[in-house]
Image 1 (spheres, rainbow, N blue to C red):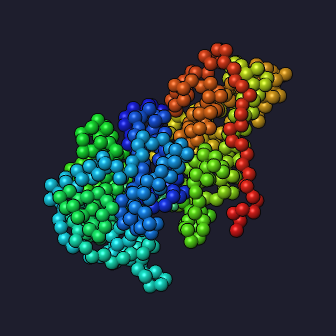
Image 2: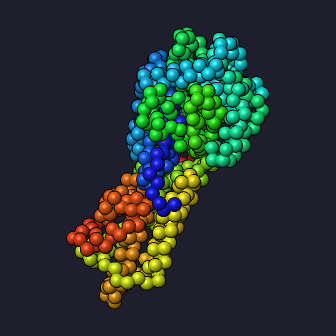
Image 3: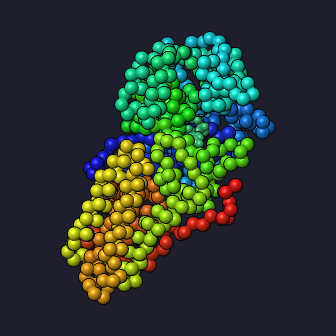
Length: 525
Ligand code: ME8
C-alpha cells in the first residue's frame, strides 16, 4: 500500500438531470467522487475526474413546457446551479460536461454509427411502458400497482403507454458477454447490486428502443433526422466525450476504459447492462468498475416537494461549513448503503470529532508551542516507548490502513481508522501532559511536542481527500513542505530540517469553530 502508484485513474459521476435544482443526493455523489479523486491524486496517480449535467430527454422537455420556456433556457439556468454547487463543495472536477455541447453531439453520433456498422440497430415500432421520471422503458412484468390503481415502475414512478416508430438496439445479442462481465470480480460493487443485475440479465434481455420521434429535444439520429436518440444513449456517451472521442486523442488512449463510474443504486442497470452492451457493439473496451452507492435520506425519509423536506446542499454547506458537511456525509454512512442525515447529526459529528478530537489536538499542541517556545519547533531528544507506540499507530494508519480502505472505497472505514489514530494522540497528550513538564523536564516536553507535531501533520495529510480546505490550512500553519503532503511524503524526514530552520509557527486559528443549531427547536417537528 505504501508505494506510490503513478498510473492513470479516470473517475466519473453520473451526470445530473438539471430539471430542478441540485439536492443532497447530487452533493453526496459529487463529494464521494471528489474524495476518491483526491485520494488517487495524493497517491501520485494521474487522475481525470468528470461530472456534469444530462440535459436532453422528455423529462427536461416537459418541465420546460410547464414553465413556458425552452428546454435550452431551463438547462442553461439549472445546469449553472449544479456547477455552482460543485465549486462551492470543492469538487475538483477536470471537466464539467453539458450534454448540449457540440462535442458531445458529435461523440454520441459517432458511437451511434459504430453500433449501426456492427449491424446492431434496426427500425421498428415501440409499443410499451415508459417512465418519464426515470427516462426508462419497463416491461409489463416489472410494474407494480400504485394505491390509486395506477401502474408504477420499480422506482415507484408513474409510467405511460407509448407507441411510436423507433430505432432498436440488439441488446439480446449481448446477453452472454454481459453475464460474464457482471460475474467478473470487481466490475460491479457492492455485491448486492451485482446479484440483482445478474438476475435481471438471466431472465432474458429484450432489444432496447433507442430513439424517439414524438419530441425533438435531444441528439439527432444520424441519417434519421426525425428521430432523437433515447436520452440514456447520449447521456452514457458523456464518459467518452470528455476524452475527445471519436478523435483518437491522448486522453482517450490514456484514460479509457474508465476506472470507476460512480453512480447511485437506481441507475445500475443503465451502467452495467446497457452501457457495456453499447460499448461492446462499438468495439470499445468496457469500464473497469462501477460502484452503485446508496441513497441519502432526510431523517430517514426520501426528500420530496410534497413532504416539504427538500434541502439545498449549498445552504447546508453555508450553514455548517463545506468541510464539516463533506466529513459528515462520508463518515456517517457506510459507502454503498443507504443513510440518513439531519442538522443535529451534522452538528454532533463536527463538534465531537472534527472540533473536540482533531481540532483541539492541533490547537493545544500548536498553541502550546507558539506560547511556550516562541513558535520555534521543539527538538527531539530520544524517544520513549510511548512515543514509539504512538508513531507506530499513526504510521500504520497513514501508510497502510487508511489508503487500503480508501482504495477499496470503504470510505467510512478509512475515516474511522483516522479517527482512532486521532484518539490515540489525545490519549498520549493527556498521559504525557507536556504542560506539567515545562518546569520539571523541558527536554522531555519538547520531545513530546515534537512527537505530536509529526503525528498531527501525518493525520492532516491523510485526511486531505475528505476535508481538503481545513487539512491544507493546518498543513500550511505547520509549515509542512508541499512536496511532503502525500501519504508517502509526510513520512519522510521533513521535520528535523524544519525544526532546525528559523521557521516559527503563529498562534493557531481554530479550524472547526463550534457549531450550534440555529434554533434549538428546529428540526424536531
Ligand atoms: O439519474 N441519495 O440523474 P439524476 C444519493 N441523469 N444519491 C442520489 C439520490 C439520493 N437521495 N437521488 C439521486 C440521473 N441520486 C441521470 C444519470 S448518467 C449517464 C445519467 C443519484 O439527477 C442518482 O443515483 O436523477 C444518480 O447517480 C445521481 O444522483 C444523479 O441523479
